[in-house]
Length: 279
Ligand code: SF4
Image (cartoon, rainbow, N blue to C red):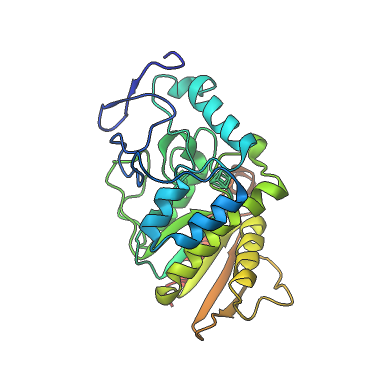
């Protein structure tokens, strides 16, 4: 591997430079070369507002460059700071687009991609221990076709659920700044708005995802979010959209190694929350 030398995709074998250019054949890449690129918070707001459907929206998300610190980090990891175990794989190196059913009735919201997970594979929660824990649970509870999600193009299919994140680019130390969270929020808000006609529930993995969903819901003028409901595992409340659709907002501890290794979040706890979404 050198900075600009292409490497073979782990599933298809196609050669890609890192970061991956839009529309060059990466499995599940929602963008093409002409997809408009947001380079400022104002452009994020404008392009999110203009997106006609979630497919359109994900294309724009996946090429966004509005947060200079995060663009620098995601691309430098992709080019020259890859984990040794993946040194001869191409790295996606772009924002993580949504993954799952476009017509889902449940939206799952995580915090942000991991540098060697989604930032490598281009798929939400794919390629790290958090994702291993999550996809096994999604499979046990009937939401996912496979117990493992290892790479884009591996055949994994989600049924009636779609995964997004509060912040779409991998942040250093997994910590986006308040400004970066605010800059990325229009992507989430527009996703919630476009999904709302079919949505029954929003599942928030962790307190930061909870805060992002509530902030987006306030911007969309959903009722039930003031005063701010408190985050907790399996806590929930019902939000009401301006056209009077009732949507459950459910909290769940994040599937981070810190939570799963310490037993703060067990497989039984996660399964229970995922099964409750079917009710
Ligand atoms: S974090 Fe969000 S707004 Fe910032 S560059 Fe990534 S996709 Fe764009």
